[in-house]
Length: 382
Image: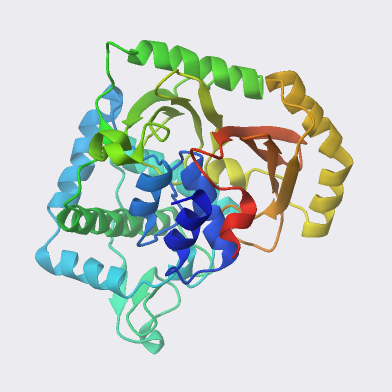
């Protein structure tokens, strides 16, 4: 099967927009978890292309993490059933399609702050999310799941406790989803222990910090702990080959928060060459300056030569054979533009750049051999 057949077969039965497909494909290929995609095929897609799923391993937060896990494990059977039904009725591609409205930038930043307290300090809501049968039963002031339209309804303004209830609802829903996936999944895990004979966690952390410093010209912030994963699909299925095997190091304050800012670096397992590095997260995104699509496009065109020059200076790639870009709406689509997704093909190497429009800065870069990984942009737009 050639890579074009692979991509078309993979997406043939997925009825979502081309942009959503591209975003999912891009995130998986970059070795990042698709935290904004509650998508039924996400696990299989990530395993095929190369993905990332972290658990909380920071020693300082382990006791609190255990308390959160106990809270989840102690849900009543009625509560678990309710969340399972919510999941079965959730047909949206993005998480936000399950809400009555999108979060504002300010709410996104507040959720990121409160999620850290939820996991690191066990700050839980005083009350659970309410449930009603029909929209007419909702008081308009509470965080409430409405069975009629299968959405979590949010008031126009939310208190900290209501935001904690919002967080708690999503944590529990994701927990039930994970339990269902674990029950349904009888395939071997592609995640393995890091082979100490090949590389140690200390060596990986040093490599990751150096890569992030080289790319962003900044150090990983104080208080951000390193978490490690060895993604080796060839161990689960040798027919996959070793091109998809890689290590990932992620730095963050709290590992489970889906809104947090995190720094990451991925390295090919065979030779420890850099696969991708950067910074991301909803908290990071919410702080980016906003533009119209037209403004973002004009700023990109005025700076494209500088981006190509930077790629040449940093990594030695020049004279592209093909290139493609789009104004990128990576998380909630508020109708504004903050980033440019820029793919550049140099022979068999695809260099994928995420570029911040406001600061005119590369904040993420990835390198992929298209013969091994597949995935130049036009192959998923069919």
